[in-house]
Image (cartoon, rainbow over all chains, first blue to last red; front, side, top):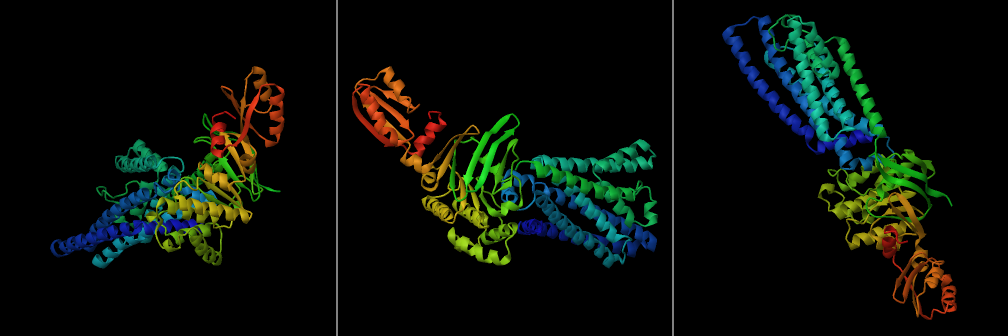
Length: 275
Length: 302
């Protein structure tokens, strides 16, 4: 399996995928740093905010930045991995691997592991970069910042599990459409749950929970955002990144199981299909 | 002698479509076996089943003494696919190294074997070039090197010469001959009958997913013969009598053309025609080429 991991990792490097994504990510973090620095200076010098008010602002700004990174990592997860299985089946490239003394599950799991590693590096660099920028400029490090990066990485892995399962029996295009549709449903479902929670509509909250079960990506984002927010921000009803309805730790366990089950089904399908 | 490939009533259906209807076949150790048939006859599907890429709908088979789908045995099989596509962002030597790793070769074995094989397929100068810059013929040759990496007991080549120029074809022919000398069995899927004719020990003709004829190539070239008989008078009795020796009988005026399986019957045949009082003017045996036989077999004349 490790030969496949190395092959895939080398492919990611050779195709300049990771480097391109990291370079653009660096541009984003730099822009964020400049923007954040200017606004932060303005707030300190003119408004004369108190420390706790300033912390609310900084945390809000940081959450907005993380939201962008979260979105970028979802795009990255789908776009890079959507054709890795189905594309190689269509082009018959997979035949040269599957006729070697390697089990089919090793091929699939090896590829997944390499992409999961790439996403973890991407998230660590971009998320870590954002936390570092905020720490240097505002001398602020939110609570659970490492856990936040972890949850956002887990979210990318959830998306990867979807595209890998889809890749074992769908065409590349259909697989990509499916992954984005599921993400869209989970995204809208998450907002319905938020608003439902504020309006105390049980039906709306339940819709959100069902969509989170379908794809726990948005739920993981909300859990990650909630973890790093101070209690004061959590209580603000008008915060667009607020988490009126916080997914429970059980949802995190569910996301882990979700990855395991989807990959297991993918291995089962891939192990039995004709190549 | 042990068989390297043994199939029993192998069948493969894709939904309603039957790709391979009923395939029973034995290939001996060290044998170079040609698998011939028109497009869509099921040749590639048979290869896929033998390599565990596709599961048979019915029947059973053994490759190198192990049932289909056995993973470990693939370390002793070399395979060059028909639709030749590898990871084209790899360099040639890197590509062979990766496949060596997949085959479980040690670093020492790979370091020794890869330069040898690059020399053999005349790509030593291109070792550091990416496969994406290779011509079709070069890709086919590096694919052949990949198939020979494990020092295999069985090599399966699916249309190995389709992208090659005459020099490339000769290279493949030489490689097959070397394998034959080394006692490696070769299963060759090819449309290029001239190649098959000079390399194979035995051939099978497959049509609509069934083997319709297998023959030793020596016997084909030397023994299976077409005979042209010129007589004074063609009678229905004469034709009926000749059908004892051949079902493939064509009459053109006073010329009768027929194929026979064994040259030994020629004296008997001429004696019989003379005895019938038909007036034997000429009886000339003519060799038929593999191509001619192929056309007749797949068009159902044999």
